[in-house]
Image (cartoon, rainbow, N blue to C red; front, side, top):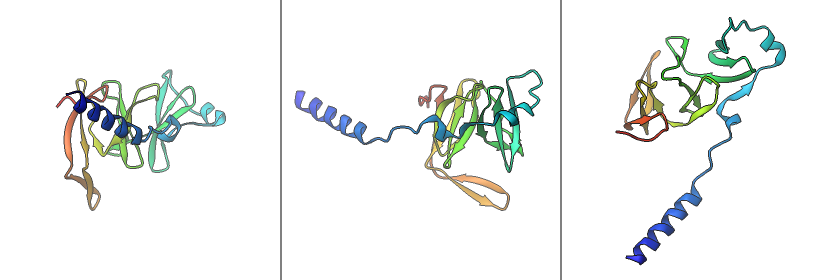
Length: 151
């Protein structure tokens, strides 16, 4: 029994040592706008605004921090259960209203949170048909706001 436990622990530590550390927040499309640009934004008494920049939308915090957000029907992703989605290198993650990454971009697709749960997909691929797209394959699960699989 001790021998099996020793092998299991050894394999666990080998697996952990081969995992890549998560990139720093800067690589998650979190950056700052210039002070001059920040002064041109009308926050209308709020801490956060969504703005189009090129073909994409960004949320900009009054502190100057900005983050890329997904779009739905040509509008920025809405905060649901206090979180919105971002996409980095084809992977989706979640951020809060302080523009802090709460769940890193590791999912191939993710629906917004609803009542503390979000459906996520790993291994699915986006298939385009004209302007519309569909998801094919992959494994679907539900996660909680901590990223723990609940279904």
